[in-house]
Length: 617
Image (cartoon, rainbow, N blue to C red):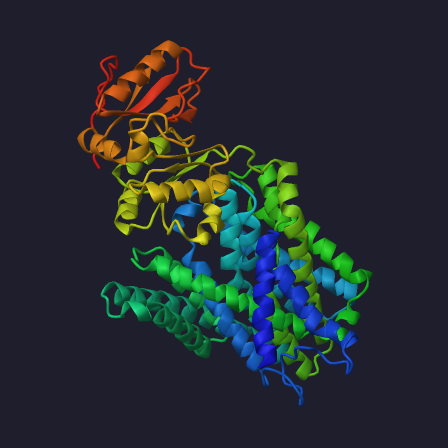
């Protein structure tokens, strides 16, 4: 009881430490696991571990292969949650790169790491290829926290995010085939077994994942499940899919749950937000438990076995030679720049799937007396811990050094997806600005998506919003909801995160009636609140541009908009196309000259000779 409670408590402490110091949680989790596991034998009186994951005849949490069953089920939930976050729209520009990374890049790692391990440690080819298959994966549980803290181009983040999730079942598939090779033996018997296993994994993985995704979506949409049971029923279906697929084809369960998550994540599912919140919380708890258990399961003898320069050389070649070669070959002919390819080659941390399957297969081969099997688990853990430590401490600095770090975040996040927000977002999108709408009203979000506008269903009071890597390039925040409390909260809570270049909100009725009470974050003008914006958008749902000659004309037009009920100034557009948000507290733009334009919502100003037609909602 004490051990189980201790694992959960230590895991959550590690998660907090990771959040506080902006580190991937895997780092403190593995260190804690080592301290209560193999390192504990150095300072306990009886030389035993504080936490013994597998029953050794005297103590232990899991009997036999119970630990690995638990690990497998937990990984299935983690990968399903990752699959839910994969949106097709993210990879319009980088789809081919991701495909090559999980195929060609995997082959480069598979053969390169095996050859390196063979000549450095002198291990058999079978063991070396098993090792290399296990380190193919780049886990989403460690890449996502790294990406959250680095403002990158959306395409660059998407490549690393998708690779980390999709490559997990591929690495598991490769490990299964190599394990079968070792178990069955070479020759015709293995060839036939490998082909059968490969076909079964693909067949059952895709079939179960695709079928149950649509079945669960149908059941949820038809309200056959009461709301209070929605999350637990979804969890049970995920476990059912994983187990059933795995029964028909060993290790096909991982592929099945990823496919299931991807299909459900890209359907019009009204409860997707709640599923994500639940699965994310569950994933945090499971990851905390898993890494501590797997690290604690290592023995000091295993660590002493690889405590030499050979291990350091193997690590350096895998990280600084094999990974970059795989990335550059996979991105040949793509739109990625050289420095972007370099960054992807640098960021390749391994995660929970590598650690979990390594522990499972390593133990099985040891039990069979396979020579060199004792190297599998400690070598994989060295790669996992080393890559996480390297990327967690250097990724941000490296991004700045090679120029992929966005020093000027031009993206705009708009809180609220009402008609006004959609009109403004559509204009921004047409002017090549990355804009994201955030609202907890699914109807508004759906309307935005129909216009081709990027929109996220989210609760503004949720801390998860700051973890969204799709908002990495956002530097401006505009709170445009009809609730003044929400607008103020959004500016205060997310101003530093998303509004480093400018954080604005609509003024409320009290502020509008008191000209002296002009907040510094006020938006558009002191006469424009949500009601005026909504009425203007209802009558004249069009954004116009009027060319300016000088600053005096601009100030005169601003005064006209204050007096006119159906005109709201929004942006100042410079000759080079840059858009500056107009604040309510000041009209002091010193660089207004010929070629600048006033962008406004509403009816046409008399001085404007354009004949724009109203846009449809």
